[in-house]
Image 1 (tube, rainbow, N blue to C red):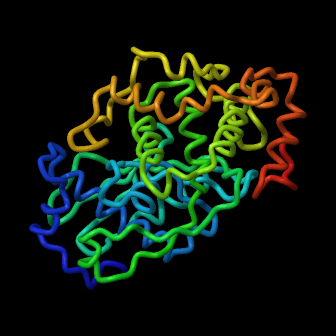
Image 2 (cartoon, rainbow, N blue to C red):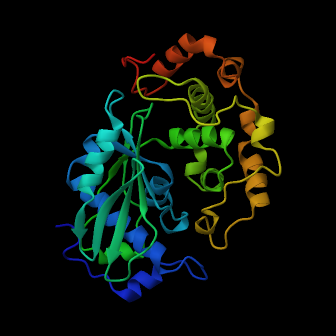
Length: 314
């Protein structure tokens, strides 16, 4: 079983907490337990039917110890027509497991899955949030974990995981920021934009994906993508406006020390001002007009590396 040969100690767990951080041991326990759990899910074949994405994927596969802590495991279904509630239940069931020093237990609250973690190092009140979303639009890629010192104590090799491509991760975060000012998304976007080699991402591809995703957030795309709550057409002026009402619930996990909200606003504008230079085609998508659905469907199908080129979407 994964984790049986681990050599973790309280000292190693304590050293996994960033220096001068106010986060404490519980978040370090969750972070390490996520590694064990992701390796277990890969071993069980779960990643045949889901793709890793989101902030935790950025930390594990791009940033390593330099990334923000994230308590979520965000996944995307591989198939558009799958029942995602049933798929989430399957993933959750696979998370009912003891892995070395960690005991993981799935909990369903109001049809949302969370994973409780207990361990010989402590029992965090924080839970791992588990979400299975719609498929990625672009072909997934396999990435290895960024090595951190504590990995040498695991007693097993962490697997490469299939993950959403970086440009699509960024586009999803930008689409969410267009409707809700989430500090964690702004922090991730800024980190990528100022960190080599990831800062060399294709801005044109991100912009194109973001405008299409904003249209879908406003109008839905069946069979898998519902309208998003509080969705609005894209506005660069709104995205970069000072004094937005930020959702800063997780700001303490963003960095050490955590950034101020004004720093997030200025960093976002500095690194993503090119979003204001959209093409006439992208401007139509950004307007979120329902009448251009046919145009949007075609654009999604012909994306470079599209997974939906032959899919029945409507």
